[in-house]
Amino acid sequence: MRQTGWLLLSLLSFSLLAANVRESGAVGDGKADDTAAVQAILNRGPGTVVFPAGTYRLGMLRVGSGQRLRFEPDAVWLVEPGEGPAQAAAIAGGEVELRDVRFDLSRLGKPEGKAKAHTLFQAEKVRGLRLTGAVIVRPHEGRQPVGKHQGWQSDVVVLSATECRDVEVDHCRAENVRTLVQTEFCENVSVHENRAEWCEHISLFRNGSREVRHYANWSRNVVFQCMWWGGDANDMHKWIKDHTSNVVRPDLKPGDEGYDPSTAGVYGVSVQNNYAEYGVTLSWGAKARNVVVTGNTAKYMEDMAYDSEGDENVVIANNLSVNSKCAGIGCYFWTDKVLIAGNQLLVLDEDQELYQGNFIRLHSGGQAGPDRFGTGKCLVQGNLLVAEVAKPRALLIEACRDVTISGNKFVNGRINTNPWDQGRRIVVTDNEFQFHGGEAVNAIEVVSKGVMAVVKGNLLNWEHAGTPEGKDAPAILVRGTGERDQTVLQNLAQGWPTAIQCEVAEPTDAGPRFILRDNTVDGAVLLPPSPPACRVVEQGTLNLSRQSGE
Image 1 (cartoon, one colour):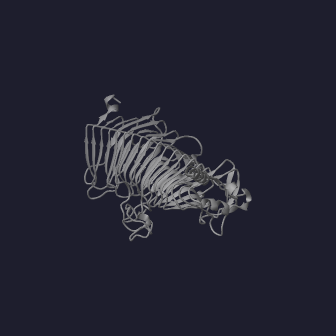
Image 2 (cartoon, rainbow, N blue to C red):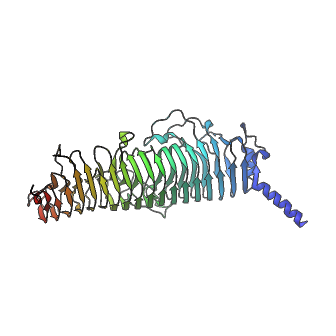
Image 3 (tube, rainbow, N blue to C red):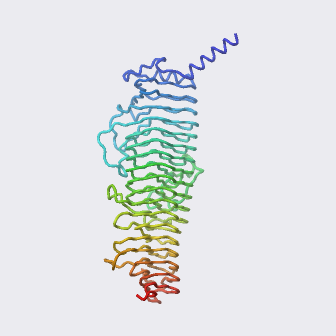
């Protein structure tokens, strides 16, 4: 009797663990409403619900703990809209898996701009959730080239998770939807091996999310493949409280006293081994702490391949950027402790010219705002920057607090530092510059505006036939203001009629001090007159043209 009871219990458990919706009353003809039949199975408790081939017209379902929805080949979930935005399922428990779901969204109507999104799966306060192998294709009528705002025309968010843990989204295909997965105050999220076209995001990690990973994804015509948003870092915006552009509050959540979405932060972001083409940015975000972006490939981006705004503890390393409209890499506003290393940033004579921008841009919104702008404690090291177009491309420093550019190789590329806000320190050391033909350009141009500048140990070579045409531009140009030292030492500059030129940008009562020591050149060295405009110290310059008797 005990054995018979055990057998009956086992058979009952098996039936609950693998229930076929057809055997429980679902029709699957795309006409009958199968919501009640499927929900009745889900109400039984944990187990696997199997959808065989067919089209299942479903309203909103409630999926509980330990439940797995598995769609067999040619099984389709036809989303039935309600009076407002549609929702396919509410995830009400943990350890849930949604496997191989194929959606038919034809009944949702046309996207309506920035209207509230249809959210297919909504999860809140659950632990253990996986969406795998889903296919989500939104019908469309014509498409426009992807731009910064094109993705907002879509109105479907596939998975929205709030205060969840252990979330995984993998091997999905999305087309013409707004976002594949968005999180808020979630922890331990993995988004990997997904494919997307004509979307706004694959991943959007929002306020308070922690330990989020985005890797091995592929996209074309996706606005922002991966984006994190822990608040606005641009204190020029009127809605940002003074002196908060560099502040995050990991201890606060909505409803807590003092909570501010602009200081929510995102903590622990990893973006690895992804591929994106014809988007705006492969990865970017604001106000995160501990960000690693590595091993990615981005081609033909309308803004920047990789961008960081107001983040802290940032590594952007070993990535490839081919033709980004603004720059391959950007750091904006208050960004601190940044390593940009081992990247290959290329500007190639291919595809549309509009994508052929600069290499790196360290930028700020300008002089307005009470907070101090600019990138601080930044090391740009060991990168290869190549422009195979006629006009040289640049590493631009428009705002900085403390930046070192060291050990990089530039081919038809230059460094231009012109911070429009008062900076502190710029060091340009041990870089190599190669130019072939063309007009003379500055390989290194430092406009200090009060910054202490050091240009040391760089190798600059310009190969050209005969006397160069056009305007004479020195290899190294230093334009100083204020009282800070401008030091140029141990550089080797060959091929420029003028090798080094120092000048006072804005005369003041106490001008800068120019220190030149142990440089080797084959062109002229032009220095401003000494006091009162500035102070000049020159020692040990070796002029190769004079040594050879020219």
